[in-house]
Amino acid sequence: MNLLPLFQWFDATSIGVAIRNSTDIFPVLEVFHIFGLTVLLGTLTITDLRMLGIGMKRQSIATVAGQLAPWTMWAAAVTIVTGFLLFLSEAMKCYGNAAFPWKMWLLLAGILLYLFVQRRITAPGARVSPVQLKAVAVLSMTLWYGVAVAGRAIAFV
Amino acid sequence: MSIFTICKAIQDSSIGTQLRESTYLWPAIEGVHLLSLALSVGTIILVDLRLIGAVMREEPVTDVIEQTQPWTLAGFITAFTTGGLLFWSEAGRLYPSNSFRFKMLFIFLLGINALVFHSTIYKTVDKWNNAAVTPFRARFAGWFGLTFWAAVIFLGRWTAYNLK
Image 1 (cartoon, rainbow over the protein chains, first blue to last red):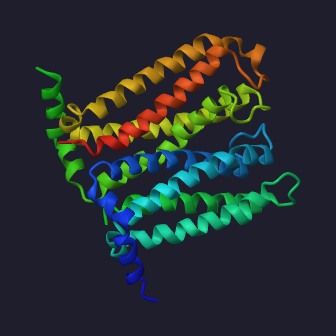
Image 2: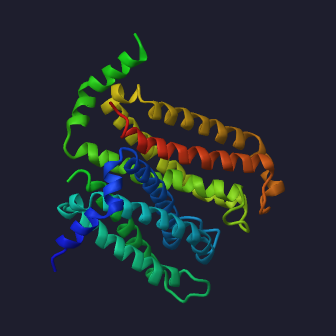
Image 3: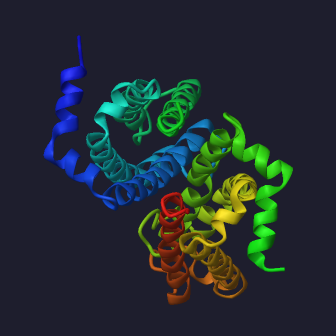
C-alpha cells in the first residue's frame, strides 16, 4: 500500500499549513507534548514497577494501577493530540524518516497492550500469575520508552 | 572575569567541544535527559498530587512519599548528570538564554520548597497521614511543586527554540 498520497494530504491540510507557517505554534505544541509525555511515562513507569514488585509494594496492584489510570489517560490524550498536530505540520518530513514508522508501530502496540491487557490484569480481583504481570510490565516499559526514543530519534536520523 | 566568559570557556573546553560535535553521544545524552523526566518529575508530580488530594486519597501520605523516593532520586541523579553534560557542551549559548535562566531559578526554588516542606509541616505528618485533604502548608507545597515543575519542563523544551 502506498501511503504517500495520505501523507501528502495530511501535509496540505489547512491546520498543518497554519502550524508550519507560524513561528510560535510548533514550539508551544512541542512543550505540551513533552509535558504530557512526562506524566504519561511517569504514571506508566510507576504502574509497571508495581507490577514488577519493586515499587509501591505497600499498596495493591489494583490500587496503584486504578489510581494512576485517569492520569495516564489524560496525559496520553494531551500527548497524542499535540503529537498529531505536530505531525500534520511536517507530515512529509515524517514520510521519509526512518524513525517515524518505528514510533507509530510501538505506539500502537503500547496502546493496545495498555487498554486490552494491562488494564484487565491489574483490575481488582483479576486472576493472573506474577510471571504474567512481570512479562506485561517489561513489555509495557519496552514499548513506551521505545516510543519516546524513536520519537526523539526523528529529529536526528 | 564575567560568568559569561566562564561559560564560554566551559563550552570551548575539549570535553565540551567533543560532546557538542559528536554524532551519537550528544543525541543519546539528550534522549536520556528527556526519559529521566518520567522518573524524576513523574514521581514528584505523584507526590504533589497526593498532597493536594487529587490521587491516592485513601493511601497514607508517607506511603506515597517513601515508596517513590528511591525512584525520584535515581531519576534526578540521571537528569542532573545528563543535564550537566548538555550544559558543558553549550554553556556559552545557554547562559544568556532567559528560558534557561528561569529554568535554573525555578529548580532552585523547587529545592527550597522541598526543603521547607520536609523540615516543617512534614514533621507532623503522623497527625494528617491518612487525611484525604492535607493541611494548608502541605497543599501549598504540592501546588507549588506542580506549578513550578510544569514550568521547568516548559522552559526546558523552550530553551532549545530560543538559543542564538
